[in-house]
Length: 381
Image 1 (cartoon, helix red, strand yellow):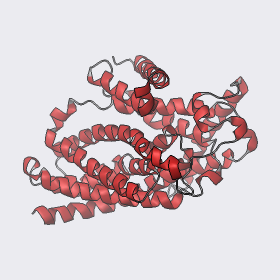
Image 2 (image 1 turned 135 degrees about the vertical axis):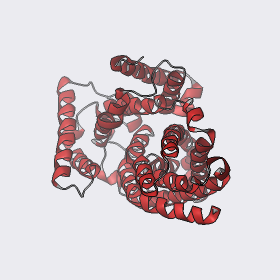
Image 3 (image 1 turned 180 degrees about the horizontal axis):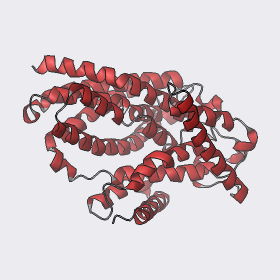
Image 4 (image 1 turned 30 degrees about the vertical axis):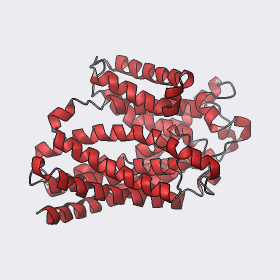
């Protein structure tokens, strides 16, 4: 199956199936539609029913997920995100330390089968699991990693990142009971305008009928913001496009007439679910054989140690589970997956802090990766 229309149809059907399973079965209700969509798409791609690579996935990773995030952000009040900044920064730093520690530990574990260049991969995995995939390439080029290790590392990273996305959708449920008993001040989920219903309701239904004028207005706003953010970035390239985009959306979200447009959260949530399903589809497990089990376990072990540290310390500090998950995704997947996770976890108040953490990771990941690489080389010889 290579036809893009057929691939997109299949992903849409996967999302529909995930929503049905969440609504009608207890087991899938526990893990949620987002994680279910990832797992279903992963099964389809690994059985050969849909491809592991497609232009559809590139589109969903780019414009589609950005449009979905814009539509959800149009419902965010600035008051709802005021308290999330400092806790998000703390969680992000804990996660970054976990990634660095994990990379160093795993370099020692798999040093034998990988060979003398294991220290270079420790730097690359540190960089990518602090600031996202772009940092993996930057550090690899700086360290002149062998092409075979470079390619294998990218393949392992794609699979591990998708698996970890599922984990971050599920793990916060383990925190839920304690959080309901007594959540720390400022960590409560966003409260929406009562006339529009709660966010949980909006994700499934527009509450009031979706009029043609609403859809036209939302489309115009979304496309206009995407164009204007690109134009502003070309005029001031020192400021990342995501900063322009979120600033424009949040400014418009405070305008009452725009907040009254019906259906933005439903449409945005659907686009996020398509994006998450495409992440599962890209995770072809047979690639593990091609990249070599040692490199896969290098990546998987690094992320596992990161997870133990961020969620373990977060549990001890009684931090919010959703906040920890978004911070972890800002580390492992970057700003885009952090935003998508916040939306899927019904915490749009964490989208902007997640973006900020992701951008910080992009900036700091390369420095940390280089430092850890040379520290690892000195340690393993």
